Amino acid sequence: MKKAITLVLILLFLFALTACSKAEPTTATPDQSDVIAVSKEAFDAKAYYKTLQSCVSQIKAKTDFVPDIALVLGSGLGDYADGVKVVKEIPYSEIDGFPVSTVPGHDGTLIFCEIKGKKVVIMNGRVHYYEGYSMPEVVLPLRVLHLLGAKTVILTNAVGAINEDYSVGDFVTNVDHISSFVPSPLLGENIDELGERFVDMSHIYDEDMISIVETVAEKENITAHRGVMIQTTGPQFETPTEIKAYRNMGADTVGMSTVVEAIAAKHMGMRVCTVSCITNLAAGMQAKLSHEEVKKASDNSSANFTKLIDGLLTEMKAE
Image 1 (cartoon, rainbow, N blue to C red):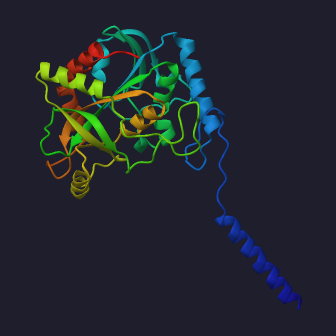
Image 2 (image 1 turned 45 degrees about the vertical axis):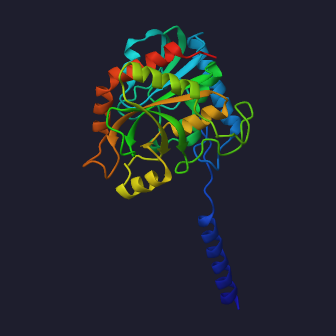
């Protein structure tokens, strides 16, 4: 009888150990309370907004510059920042809680400057979902810039052409996008201080700014298209079959950034415009794809890119 009782107790003990091993692991408390959680399940809206406010305070402690426009420079397009009148530069690494770029071609510096009479803050390099950052972290820099004063954002990037009428060196302004293949940056508890819970995405991209880009492109003899961009997670390039599927869905270009930033900007009520540089033809349309090729093509298009951005900043009205 004692042996039977002992055996039952042993079995109960083993069962308890097994149940504990299958339990969900606990989330370690961050050393710095201001740093946001990475997973969607652990997203803490109050802690995240506290991080935003902390970043804003740190930046304001370094400069009293209030930007009207945010300009995000994508892969290989950072040379544009070399020719601007700089008021203040702040590396991302000097702002606690601010994500830092890890991709070649993304310098990782905030540049507060004046361009064509406009007060602009340049993000010289962005962070991406594929670097291991959460979506709230990916769009954190843009949210900080909006809280600093920016009401308009110009998003630039390098994209692959899906539309067979596009060529390397052409430029594209988005009139719409497809975001279904990446997590929304608005998942989790809504932060009412930033925007409303359910956001209309019928008209994300500013028509007046698109028209200015087209006018400048025509004047400078630069090929520019209106298009629809699809964002994927990366970091791998897409397969030929995926590209065929995206083309059938109505996508003209593909990239690994920008769309989620446009969503976050729209959520905050910002005017949004994109200027994309076609740096490669998508999978199945050319022999091989590489990041080096993307950066090289961006470098070759830098002069035309400068003309488009300068022209846009000259003609647009700051709000």
